[in-house]
Image 1 (cartoon, rainbow, N blue to C red):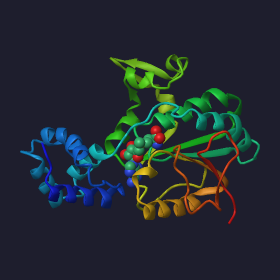
Image 2: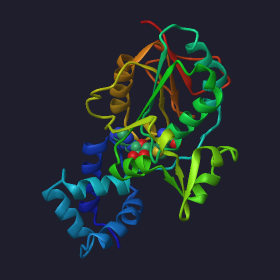
Image 3: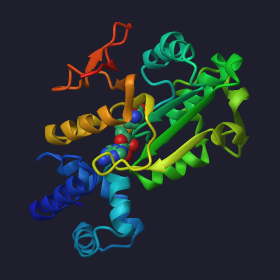
Image 4: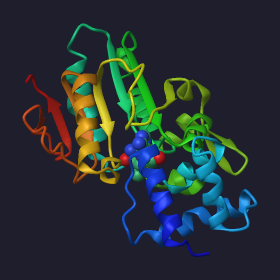
Length: 272
Ligand SMILES: C[S@@+](CC[C@H](N)C(=O)[O-])C[C@H]1O[C@@H](n2cnc3c(N)ncnc32)[C@H](O)[C@@H]1O
């Protein structure tokens, strides 16, 4: 199933306009591969008819399915380990010294939910003594399919085997047929919401910690700049931002300063 140059351009434009993600020339194979099963599932004759239908109704159900299919959802429990270590040993203990009694954490572009669930499990294990504190975790995603998976809390054995500390399995999961499901009490602790990072960030509180990892790589510089401007407004002064390794707040280094924790991808908001 090969895509014509014209259809590839249409998909590039659609994907950029609706998600901010760039698809460079040469990524035709990726579009073909990722849309193949959608052509089949939605009973289109070929890729060309899917693209024609998308053009007629880009904001409809098909548009959402194309976004689900084209976005990259790679993630795992406790991905990169160091952000979670830093939160456990330095950042959360520091926040607990204040007298606000509330900590707001945002897992942005959370894919299938391993990141916010890792946060919730870490908090449950390490901060049991702070029961009088409210730990609020908001987790957002653009892909409706991923959000559905997040809310279900269902993970395969393979997903469990990628990064989950073994003692967490009996503690936080229950067996459901061939899968593992996060227990309802932990699922209820996370507020999963749809949010497109490239549009208005409505309804978010001021955050103590933002994890926005492995998503900025898909955006052009002007979109990244706009996102960092919004981060400056949503992050509390002195709040912490985690990016993916290799992602940096280019152009905002005066406000988002790299911390001296062992991780290179943690930045603290300083006053301007
Ligand atoms: C590679 S995953 C990263 C998941 C997780 N943050 C991690 O580091 O493991 C990137 C996620 O960003 C989401 N995404 C892409 N564009 C987005 C946008 N404009 N707004 C919100 N999420 C977006 C994708 O759907 C995908 O689930």
